[in-house]
Image (cartoon, rainbow, N blue to C red; front, side, top):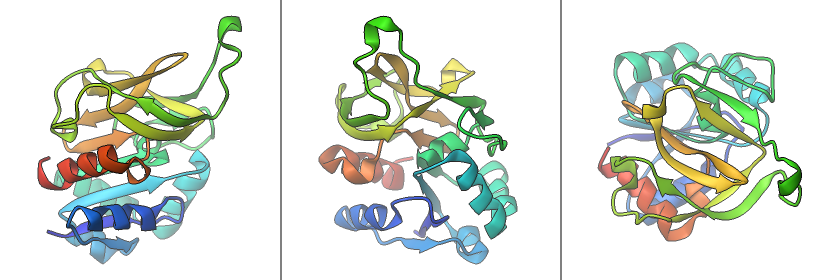
Length: 206
């Protein structure tokens, strides 16, 4: 099996590779079209600004091969943090259109007067709550804990795409799935045993 971690220069690619190695899987860090074409599983980490992420995808010229692999060939892909946000149509953080792989938009956290003590970004450990069964969360008990760092969150326009939520002021989408497209707002590569289990599920089960 060839696992390709897409390297757009906007993600913790080394940390993801190291975590995969801990669970017994080798992977390739690359933004080469030839590597993406041969991938059995794709992982798309991302941190930073929405427009910067889209600009890097455009500069690297990988959008056509991504669309072919994900939409036509149904190759499983996992977006992490900004990577998941880029799967949607747009973000309040930027002006560019997203990849449009999922019917979703990204918005900034907003809190009312009773929640003013909540800080932005949402940073640190938090629990997830499964909305429905999905192989990505196999053997992860309800209220598994993951590490988050983000100021924006995804809003899915189709409820059936939501597989887990997290509460920070209110419930937000912390994981989604549309067919072969998976996304997590948290960082599994920084989430110890829970992150290891999630990545193992993505590689071995989905």
